[in-house]
Every structure is written in C-alpha cells, then in structure tokens.
Length: 60
Image (cartoon, rainbow, N blue to C red; front, side, top):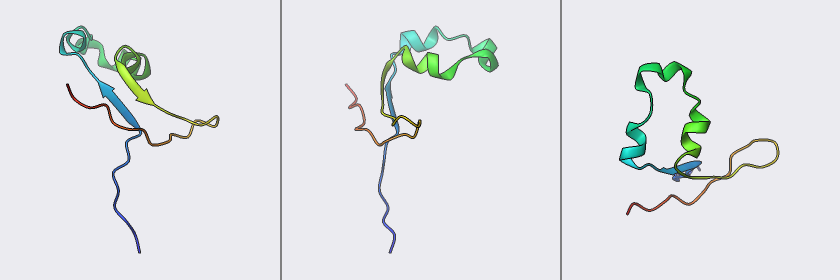
C-alpha cells in the first residue's frame, strides 16, 4: 500500500524587498540557483546530486 507524505527538497525564505530587485524583464537570463542562494535557502544533496528531504523554514 502507498503512503502520502510531504517531503520538502528546497525551502527558501524570501525577503520581499530583495525579491523585487530581480530583473523580471530578463527572466530567461536569470540563473535560478544563483537567485535562490541570495536568500535563506535550505537544501541538501548527496555527492551524486540527488536531493534529500529538508525541514521547511518556518515563516516569521
């Protein structure tokens, strides 16, 4: 039998003011990984690049 669980592979706390600084006119050129690293980012991968579940960041 299957089970339904919520697993978080990424959790990001994004500040509205810093989010507004992104160049929405050029989204195709935005490096998503670099953008996420500007914020409070929680992620965990093993050496082969496979994601492991993380605890979500609690909202303030």
